[in-house]
Length: 411
Image 1 (cartoon, rainbow, N blue to C red):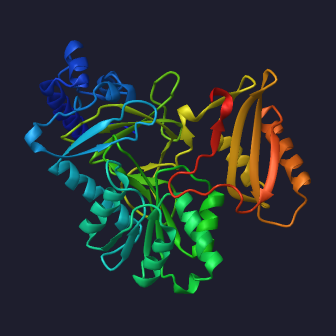
Image 2: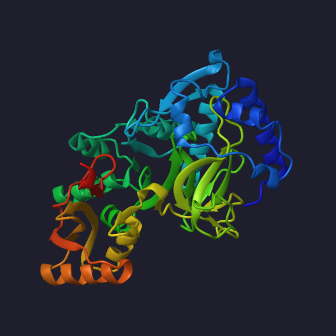
């Protein structure tokens, strides 16, 4: 995706703000003698920014606007080190709400919808992001937050919620509970907006069929506003993202060079108008591709493909690089297997072992299915895992993100 002249002008405003504020990135630019870029080539010579840079700036080293203009902070989870603190100005909050409003509109959601929000509130960007966009749209918000499934289902029925916002894991849990309780006739849901974790086609189909709703895949990350920077339309040919707010590149994660549209690689994002904590060439480590050509819906906004995984998802087992998405793709080829799976990696008797737990939704010979799955994995990846088949519903469900890969080698 070529950067436009308008986008370059906005990048130069961001460069000026970063250098003036003396932030970590501003210092990088000042040391390199960079005060502006004038072409695609010059832009691609700008240094990347990484999550480690953002952690090093803790707590408020990313703050680029004057403190009196900062109205809010959000934070990443900090599960693998210091959290990343992102300051927002009032304009940032408003811009984020505008992007999220567009997402709802692309999904065909209107101010007559009742939107039940189940992701978490607080320092995390999820719940408040969904709410901000819904209020900008003028819809009725039911700000439930996570957990308390009993209360979620009660409010869903009593309030006649028409839209559910959730992680895919929690949407599946709700769908299974609705089926189990036989209350589907009381549920008025028509659409679901799903975000925060990668999910496969099999899981999407289970939730859609179980609840009888249309599902929309929303994209975002705390460092770049939060959820709401992109969403798929009804044609489901990728997620439209808002290129008046963001410039997105796809790079080869090894060579760090941009790849042509249509090729898979790592998403790198530059914020074009962010004030509180602008980021230039931020490596997300999410794997996707820019879909070339026009969408059948006629919108001019460019499209990203579904997130395939992350560069740091990779597992090295018996000298082989394996991604969870590869295992998921194999499992999707077995109609008897449900959408839920778990991978456990351990080190026993001097060698690595991969165990794959899968649920079956049909009446089948468990051992025969396990053998067939193991054989297919070996043919694709090159080694034979231990496969255990269990009845549907036995693998853990989550109100947040489901942990599908458990590496016990380092416990």
